[in-house]
Amino acid sequence: MTKYFFNGKPYPRVTEILRIVQDEEGLQSWRNRTPNHAEISKKAMNLGSLMHWCIANELSPVPIELDKEIPLRDWPEDTPAEISARMMHFRRLRLKIEPNPTLEHVVHHDVEGEYFAGTLDGRGTVNDYKAIWDYKNSKRIRPEYTLQLGAYYVGSLREGYKAERGFVIRLQRNEKELLELDAGQLHEAGEKFLELARKFHKERI
Image (cartoon, rainbow, N blue to C red; front, side, top):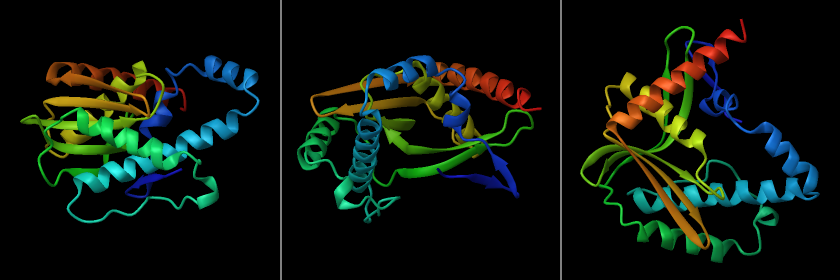
């Protein structure tokens, strides 16, 4: 897992802070009734990494390498069909993403008592709006995904980038789903995430 450091100080990850609102009991219950949960999780993680890589290369003018090596033995047998279907769904969303977006970009927020860092999947102009976006390969769009976009919105503000739209792009082999937030919703999500960040740091004092 990536560690973030700024001025020699470790910053908690956005996903680490979001654990406050995640359904840990539900997750543990699923693990208890699913003997091969580790295998399923590993497959989902590897397919997610490959999906991110393929989309990034579709949007980037220069080749992008995988951020981690995935041995061939860990590639699910249906990987080509799965990724091909997801890419087809991505194109069918017909998002007008202008060339040369910022991809896999680390943002951070450095206010004492609420600081954090994370890596957004994309930032640039989409459908003529300044936008940020995140890809998911889950079975549904979870409530915390909105808060995650809020965190990236706050982190982008620090760099002078005020997003007007936010997108969660969920892709599976047999379906696609798009969640779009406007500027007001992004601001609200950012404020709610900062509340979580303050709670996170307060609990660690």
